[in-house]
Image (cartoon, rainbow, N blue to C red; front, side, top):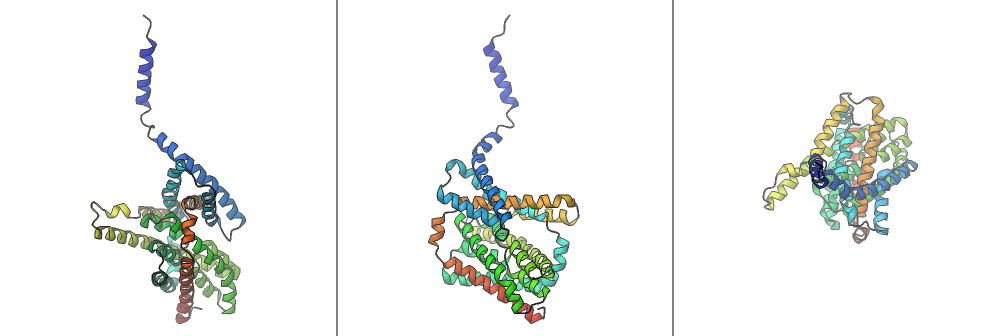
Length: 357
């Protein structure tokens, strides 16, 4: 008796469908996210190459600028949006965790104790100045907070860390990072000359640069242009300062939770806004501190973390609306200038008061 092909075909399709049921959910996700992720990664690779050619600017800044340029020239269609959103959020959080693998908590703790007084004053000054000047200039709350966090802690990386918690508009994030970069560039060019004019010691300049310049690459550039000793010390101070993003993220998450409860949000839980990726950052730092990361792996991990940051910031640039940024006018720039000047002067004032210059 010959078998009936239709029956066997139907059975085969049924069996195949049962066997292939597990991977099915991945296929729609990939189809939905692949166009945006591919676009974002392609622009990010170009940004990374430009950043290597011009390290003073760096890949993250090139990423956000190129993203804004691409969106301005030809805004990505709806098919690209899921992947771009994924890169600007989930990839962003993964990049922060990856950074933890390059940060030794032991070394940071030693230097942190020595620079604690200056760091504490400059961070407090940054937030107070951002609140007061932002209110006087009538800058939007999220943009005001992003500029304050970026100036107080570590520039674009700090802004990237708080974005998943406060959920600002993409153009506010782009504007804040662009403002921070502007004053990073000015600091790299201006700080060494001012340091020599003020006759600062190597440690004094290193502490000043490490507490008053925002981005790590800019701190390194300014520090080593002053002296090798100043560069070494400035870099460690900067890494110490960067760890403050952990308590700041936790406090911000608690404030978000309190605000939601005050508004009468039902079913709201702190766990929904708590920055769990910061806990994974601590785990990664602990792994690095315990020496569980092989030394030959560290350059590759650092390169991977850098690429993830560039991808995430490129996605933010692709989501930013340049026209809305332009509509903000000069007030955010003036806010960034005022906060940056307040931090730089307060760092020098504390060092002078305790005799560390």
